[in-house]
Image (cartoon, rainbow, N blue to C red; front, side):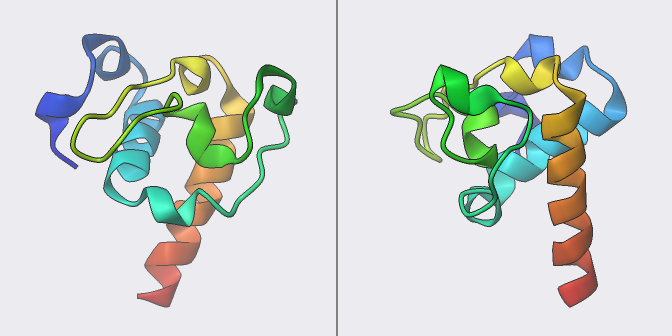
Length: 89
């Protein structure tokens, strides 16, 4: 994904968090069918993609959610999806 779209706050995080946000931006469709188990459903998240993007976000104009910046569970779920996508390629 284009790093110029990433907020500075994301780019200041650990590499695994940066990779998760890049993946979410590049391939959100892979996260939209994956539930998140961190409890973020309580803040309105419907799937793992919602941990990275706010409602109204589009690929052309992403509106980033900072939830995954601080949630290891969200990032771990995304890493599993990334591994699954890599292994199926």
